[in-house]
Amino acid sequence: MTNIQVVQFLAGMDIVMEEVSEKELELGHWDDPVALEKLALVHSSISSVVEGTAMGLGQEYVERALAEAVIRLMDFAYFYNYDLPAAIDVRRKELLA
Image (tube, rainbow, N blue to C red; front, side):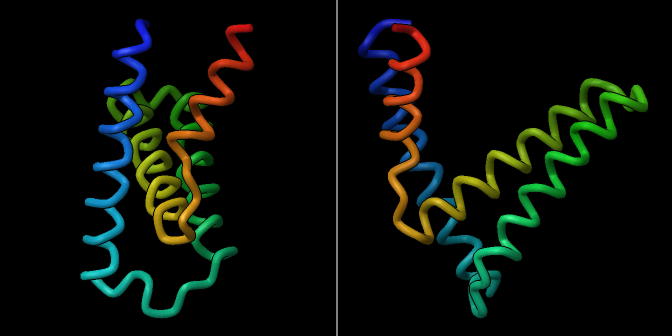
């Protein structure tokens, strides 16, 4: 992946995070924000990935569960103003070093 592609990916991720979080706010999902409950939803999505893989529920099931986990993480990060794209870039650079 080139540096330009990485920058485009991270910029796109920022946009998606904002879109997702704005929709979650509109739906009232952040009316009573309890961080541990939001993180429990991420855990639940990851558990669905484990279950789908272990039980052979198919690629589509696992992909949807993975997508749900990523979306929940992006929403959480955006709401609490965590710079997830920057953190991903730092971690990516560490892994590639």
